[in-house]
Length: 377
Image 1: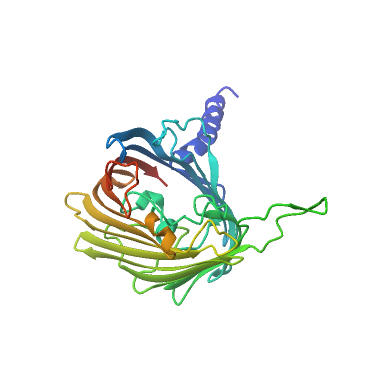
Image 2: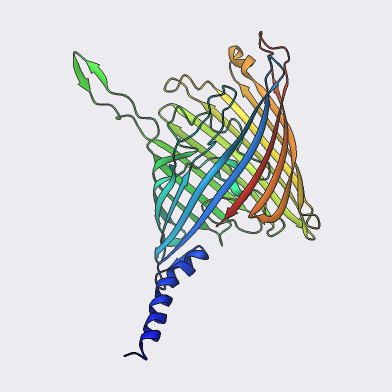
């Protein structure tokens, strides 16, 4: 018994350490069909935003995103995804009211079953609403720093969460994975209860939000829950997509094109997204409008740098809303210290409203951003 004790201790220690060792690689393998994969994202950010009244700058050091991610494979063709986020924590904006102790929110939480393999998969939970490409792009792989300014103009009224909503949908890949589609029926905005003849009439009886997207990849297929903002020369991609959504008489349509091509070890990336919204009577606070977003960049592999440009424009349909129109022109540089795992981005943007505010000393203003990204998944 005495001779066997060291062996038992060693065996016990190895069994106890096995999960820890597996977790250090961000993967826990339960058996041949069940496994869990973990990741994290941190984006410390500095931002200086010019005030058109004083011409001075509001400055903030904050965390743009703090995320924890988990993907699980539960059985053949059955998977789950869960992601938390604490966005803009520490940011005071232009008001000076510092955003602290907000806590983590559930960003994504869905289960998926490929009952026809990857040709048709049932997805349910909280997930990204099908729309144009940029909001469906992994935030860790953005070419031009961050999300478009006006892509989520409908988000507040339709009660979305960072482009996500609660619902069920189908997605899949056809034509040798070159044709992909995403569809969903979502909760959207729910009507409030009302009082009729002194009695309360139940709310939440309005129709759901419905959205869909179809994309064709001419060369290399793109697969996964999110797209890449730039492949850094690892793929040959030319993709064109169309999207539509609606709830009640609210309608939104759009389209996008994405080009990412290796040139030797370098890479050129170009993207353009277009969206048209009209809230009609159901969402009168969302007047008819259209927004265009575009970015382009070139990756120099020898120096691990990627200069880029970014352009946005917001237009309104009605004459009385034209003073709200705006465009933004910017550019910057990504420095890939360790690929997307550790990246430093510097960005400058010129904000150009159509009309100068009556109280403003200047019409056009500046924005400067420096962001560091730590990411593993």
